[in-house]
Length: 286
Ligand code: SF4
Image (cartoon, rainbow, N blue to C red):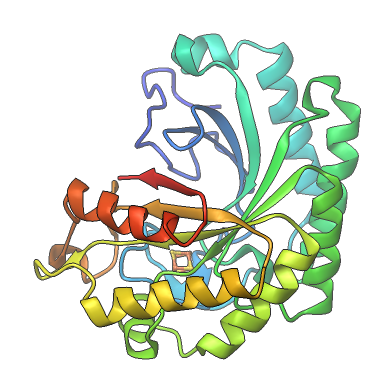
């Protein structure tokens, strides 16, 4: 368990803060409580390379084989510690002493794990064994690029039965901007298709990160294209929950870090208002 001198705070997202391979606690400013993080990418590998990514030593690749027994042991013992032990008293400030969610969000793309479906199944079994967790939310934070895989879709279906929610990364609508920000060639057409699939399986939020590069916020052509895409999704009545609109609160650990600065709060608010005007809920997180 974590060194008591290192009280967790809103900026401590270190994956090894509990000394485990897969499970890590986060006091989340987003969540307003303890989020139980599950990191299926202890190898720091992702199929994308976002310039704002906070994963240290990020490399291209996929999740390694998941040791399901180890994950089960870690999750059960950590939940036991949170619910029946003194973890909250020792490490968590009083105002955040509640379990907010279980979040599949790690040092890479969680759906790249071959065992993704089994992981969701396992979380379902474990949740059942803890009365206190019956209504707990299960969040998947994903770049959405692997939604086409049947096993991911089965996992998403199961997630929906477990009070699940998907946060689907969609930062930029123009291909060249996605290449610059996320270092991916995924097309808007594919993203659209993946959104059709994911929203039909599990409640889904879009997750969009905005910031300045060399002092410039996203260009007007980019924001126009983004809003146009949202409008299209609305017209098609895709059942989206809304947009989580983020700034960059924590420093990037990528080489581009010195070029990145937050957009002004007024820029972020104005962008949020434009999205809201299209009829979607927006949660701002500067
Ligand atoms: S998708 Fe997530 S983990 Fe992968 S590079 Fe982007 S921010 Fe990092």
